[in-house]
Length: 260
Ligand code: 13P
Image (cartoon, rainbow, N blue to C red; front, side, top):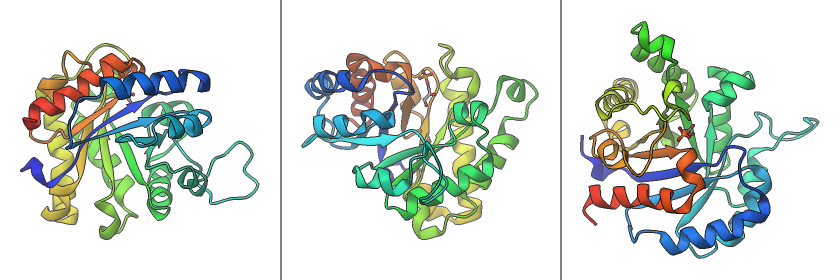
């Protein structure tokens, strides 16, 4: 399927790293190193506490600000929670939902992931919906079945006119933070399966327009091979997004793939 119908996206997931006071110098360094690609959307998903500083430091740049989670609820007595409207008010463009670390440590379920994605879309932002199998599921040959289930559950409440604003990230749990990357073929196979599920359920036009990212130990060394695959439209990057030079190298790989 032709990649010209969808956006290339390189999104950093800082997780619980860096300090609010470190954001300005990070942003300055990244802006300096940013390759001159017009076709790649660059996003930094920061902890909530860093977002205002990051927003300010990225003013007039082509880098979008993202968040890493949000509350299921609109407002009210939910101590410690952050709503979609609050993120939108800070000019956040993207919100990660259903990251495996939220599923594993914070009781996130396939159904709360779907509801959170709807809340993001209703507030005019784009969800980056994470799916991916454990090592045990892969070894038992259950990868496709599991990813299919997660994808359908996450998308079930999203109407067609909103679906095109969604991004899916395939993140095999065994590749996250381990230095073990899925091979380009393994990652392509699952990303192609996700696109096929969307095509079967929601039609070819939507399937070809949704960006599907790979995440799991992506680095400057393996990015080019992964991003050259026909169904991998970008990356969701943890560790390598914490160093401006490493992150810029991955963005540069997109420029090489698109021939810019
Ligand atoms: P790493 O790139 O550190 O493996 O993390 C991937 C990830 O979890 C991005 O959301």
